[in-house]
Length: 605
Image 1: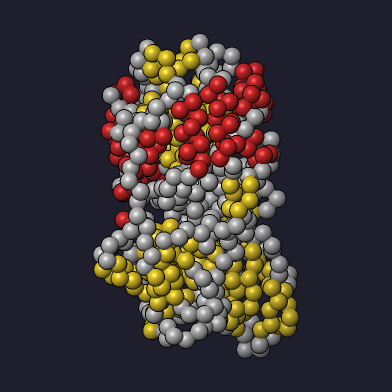
Image 2: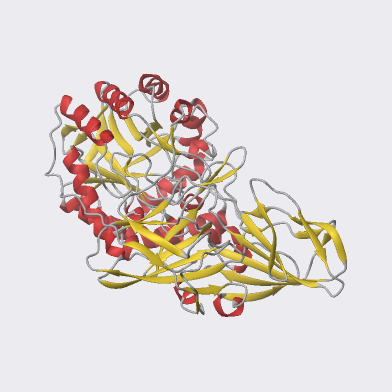
């Protein structure tokens, strides 16, 4: 049985009163070599517990194909926390939100019309098969088995999405049936709607908010009088979207609200204690008034920066814990060094449109336009190509429901860009002999929160010239995984030549010599938009639209000697084809987090 229980508005661990002091660190946003460093910094601050989500799409990227190694080795992360003397709270999906691609749901679910996050039999069958793989890996880590896991969440903020409480009961019973005997709980915002839709009788309920603690706890007490106060997500920062400022929150304000929570006897989980990085294609997106994709950095203005440095917020939190008699839990680890390696000339270039057959994962013939998921593609880019008959003069090309950003080429020349947040037709003229039409679409991240989770990618409702649907397409699937990246053909470019963008997507490659690997930051001054890799590891997206101006490169991704840098640049570079590795991060211009955002009294972007 679980060592953690609750009674009389308190938690009890092994029969003694216990306050959960937790911080969120997501193993999947931190390279494994740094897990111990981040966990030790959490313990040093005075916390006794770490919380992490488990994203389904990381562990089952293709249906029936499971991954639990490297950055996906959740058992090793939990074991590391336990070895360091920390308890663990696990939030094991199927849905996690977390500003993570599709809220952690795997993209292959979208190939079917099954219901999501509800009592749909097809969906539940997929969840069960996943749990059959996941849960047995967690059982030896439960506190009843001598492990550090003291609590596990059922789904996530379900009251913000639906009211199918039979579904929540099914997930709860599925965990119990597989042998999970630790404390189970739900977490939701402190509103009537969310608590009504997301809580289940007999299942411990917790709440999520960022300020106005007394008001939020008061609403919670209307529903749960005897249970302990637990803020499962105390939002002390916020995440960033492209084309918006970097969010920050005053350290004194964060400390004041934490003090108020502790004075009321609450337990708390800081979301986030350390945010980390949305490596690869795994950033999510929000859809309020419009589609807004999340940046690569998940710094979150947390007490530890994306690269693990202490902030004023960390020091302010430490001061509050000290005020409440909570000692430091461990010596603080030595700072991780950073280094500038200077400019890196990208001396090789390989154009995408010239080698589609070579770098595509697959090329498929399709009469009509279909989204990525129809072709079993989850992430990356998809290119639709056809031959258009002429003559046509100044007609309108319509990409119906572009998801999320498309570049349109006629006989290899860029004629326009269509963006989901600003859909506009593109003028097209075709000579009498006809022309080749190519439409390259970037998946910029699936919606992770709210009613628009069913977020197919590519072009979802067809391509028209004026009112005429265009047919007979060659579809090139471009996830740019390691096997496709290895097939790119490069030609030498003149590095001393100042270039002007030609609008054609291309791969650029260069090498940097490293004497001693250290943390560094990859800057893209002059580049416009694309994806970056270091030694085959996909760092994430960059975009001149900001706010983020540099990508974090952890030292374990580098090696002594030569290191390969690859960009897939969508538009070309202004100036010399080079990037810079510097010891200075750059998250862009800042703006304070809106008070309304921190209280679920909002449109949740």
